[in-house]
Amino acid sequence: MNPFHLAVPVSDLAAARQFYGELLGCAEGRSAEAWVDFNLYGHQFVVHYVPGYEAARYHNPVDGDKVPVPHFGVVLSPSDWSALAERVATAGVEFVIEPHTRFAGEPGEQSTMFFYDPSGNALEFKAFADMERQLFAK
Image (cartoon, rainbow, N blue to C red; front, side, top):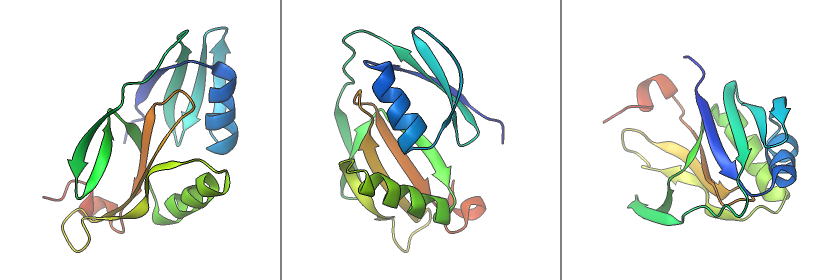
């Protein structure tokens, strides 16, 4: 797969550096006064400082959950997903949707969790037991 590039607004670069760099473990790349590149599991993720930024908070129902929209994240291996869920919980980050299994016993069964970054951007991290077969299963 090719790495994606995603840039999102944040209201506080120092808080973003702590959250993405220290908590999520994303190595920092290039930066300037108003933006920072991170390596988000092999993808180029950039935060841009926007004074007063507040993320919109919309939700759509999915399998009994109120899923934040928009959101972004990465599909991880089950072991990396479990380690991240534990790290985020231990750090006291509040889950929007607690780590759990969605679509249990159905095509596309997945482990998923949602939480917000310090600027209110929603993130989802998920894992599949068999990613090749389940990622786009109907």
